[in-house]
Structure formats: structure tokens, C-alpha cells
Image 1 (cartoon, rainbow, N blue to C red):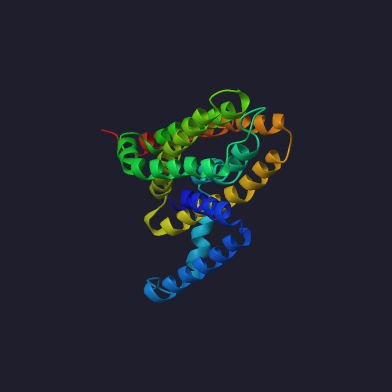
Image 2 (tube, one colour):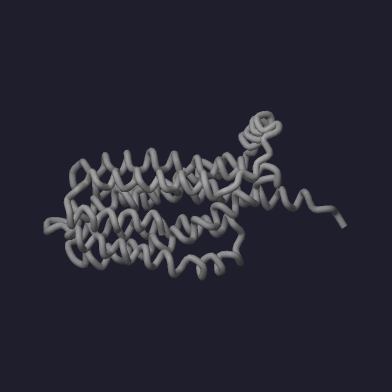
Length: 268
């Protein structure tokens, strides 16, 4: 919700006032408030004794965990997808879709992203419950295919001359489902991989994937949006097919984990 609301409220502010710099001022104030809440309202529970040796040992063990490292690479791609939704996609709808016609108005883009946020909020729990019947890796593969379908609809919004608004709404609806399918399962999967004493370290690796994804995602998407119509359109098609780079490692990881589980069971 926070990622989506940032796009929506930022778009409303810019469209109504044109004050781009105020976004950074508001962000700065929000982080100061966040810092104050952490400093004054949250108690430290960590035992400071022997923290450094345990921290180094924990990271050493995490970086030797092959399933975690495979998943980290996959997770960077997932977070890159989320970054594209918040950064490159509004630019694409504003500057390129539909082909040969007037671009989608910024106010209308804000409305479409508002729908994306609402759908994300109302489907989070139902989808999470439904995915609980699947193995974590299976759920992540399903999320990857859904991302691919959503990005394919983004490509259609700019590649064909009719129904661009329908394709835009459909793409963000599908991507909302993909995001809520990915986010809770990703954290749960990392926790399932982690030894009890190293959950913090393993979740830190998960957070680093988000940092890397949001570092490279806007850079790649921004570059594509600065190019010709053909490159900007093709970018979303390439992104849709890039889910293959997620699904294949996840299939290998799923088989590896199942084999490991079978070998660890006591014989009867």
C-alpha cells in the first residue's frame, strides 16, 4: 500500500501544484518522524553481548546457503519488477501510450494507480490464504507468470492503437495480483530457509534484494523511457519474457529442496 500510495499521492501533488521539490521535502520530514518513532517508542530487545562475532558468523553461514543465494538472485528480479511499476510505468503511460495518439492524461494515470492500490489492499489476505495450499516455490512461480502477463498487457497498451485505457487498467490489475502473490510468500520462504537463530540475517538478505532491485530497476526503466517508441515498447515485452529467468531457477530450487527433504526423512 505504501509503494502504491506514494505514486498516487505524489502524482496528485505534482498535478495540482507542480511543486516537484516539495516531494523531497515531504519525504525528508516523513523519515524524521519515522526516526523519532523508532527512537522513542520502540524498545531495544537485542542483547549487546557478543553481537559482532555472532553477526559475522551468521552472515558467513547465510552466504554459504546455496538455496538462499539462488533465491536472492531471483528476488532481485522480482523487486526490479516492483520498481518498474512505480517508476517506469507511469512515464510510459504518460509519454508513449497509445501509439500515434494523445498520451494518457496524468490525472487519469493517478486514477488507474489508485485502483491498483485499492485492488492490492483488498486482495492481499484472500490471495495469501489461497496460496497457502501451495509450496512456497510454486507460489513464487505463479507470481512470476502473473508478472509476465501483466507486463505483456502493458506492452499491448502501447503497441496497439485501440483500447489503450482498457489494457492499462488490466495490466495494473494483474500486476496488483502479482505483487500481493509475491510479497508475503517471499518473506515466508526466506523464514522457512533460515535457522531459528539466523532469521534476522536471512531477512536482511531479503531486504538487500529490495535495495538492489530498486537501484537497478529505475535506472534501466528510465533509460528505456528516454529512447524511441520502439525501444520503450519493446522494453515491456522483454520484461514480460524475463520471467523465464525467475521460473527456471525456482524449478531447480524446488526440486533441490524436495530432494533434500526426502533425504532428511528417517527411513521406516
